[in-house]
Length: 148
Figure 1 (cartoon, rainbow, N blue to C red):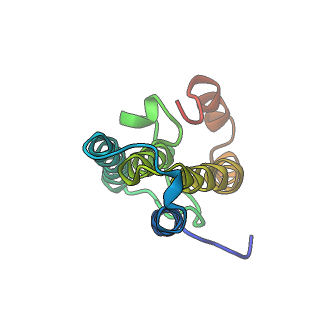
Figure 2: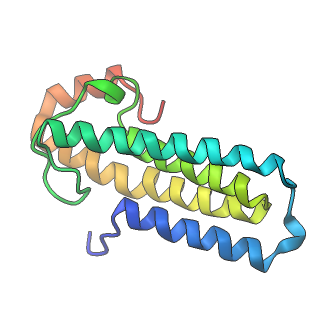
C-alpha cells in the first residue's frame, strides 16, 4: 500500500470536506439551531472514545500507527466490545459534526470516512494482526465484532 493516510488526518480531511459541502450547498440544510447543537454531544462522545482507545494503546505500549507492525494484541477495555473502537469514535464524531452543520451534504464526509476505514484501513490492520498473532487474533475476531 503506497498511499498511507493516517486515520486522524482522514478524520480532519472529512471535517473540512463536510464544512465545505455545507457552505457549498446550503439548500440541503435539514436541522435548524438549536436542535443541531445535539451534534456536539455525539462529536465529543466520539472523540472521547478515540482518546480512550489511544490511552489503552499507550498503556500497553503497542503501536497505534495503522501502517506500522503491531506489538501487542489489545483485547481489554473498549476492545472487548469493538475490534475498532477508535474508528468507531471517529465515525461517531463525524456524525455529530454533520448534525452540528445541519446539512445533508455533510453526511458525505461521514460516509467517506466509514468506507475508507471499513474497506482500506481496517483490512490492512487485520492482515497485519493475523500475520503477527495468528490463531489468537482469529479467535478474537470470532468473539468481537468489527464495529459494534
